[in-house]
Length: 136
Length: 82
Image 1 (cartoon, chains in turn cyan, orange):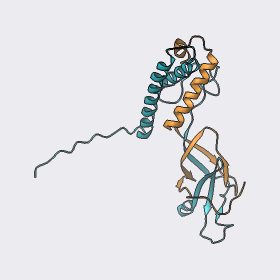
Image 2: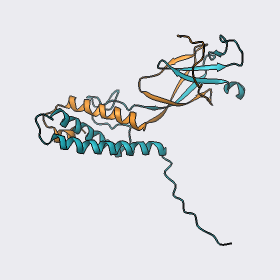
Image 3: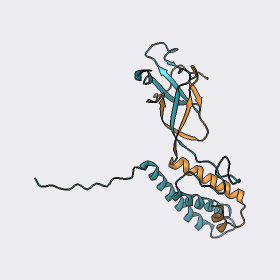
Image 4: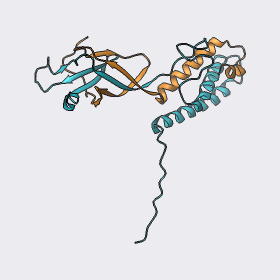
């Protein structure tokens, strides 16, 4: 298949589905976006949810002895969020709960901020530049 | 992780803690978009629409037959429900 043929394909999202279609220059609305041939490989580059924690040791999901796929430095944030939710449940009976909620919520938001930063760097790191003046 | 939560909430059961941890993990994944993967499938003859698995938060880019293809701005005038 010539490269120009692949470049005439487009994608869009509609009703929780991805559409792959060949775009033609024809003026006919019926033939402008046609389906692909069979057996062509489509690769989606996605962001996804992590798996879920399960009660079993191993299996479909994160077992008791396993760890989530998010980087290790953010695992503690999940614990902080769960602790916060626990205090929210006991807000009527525990006088220390409002303060604890505030503390753990702030830790959680800080972790989210760190996670976003981590996600955006794509592991390329940040470059540090120093421009040195040179006398000619 | 469950033990760490239990230190603050000793009366709460493991199942409830797992629900909280799962809520946290889901929110963290959605808000940070930290897990990036590739997902592959094969096309069927003349079939335009392919359902997306529930675990996908967003599609960032698409390769068709080994080449990156552009995203259509808007939707086609003629729609179908296949």
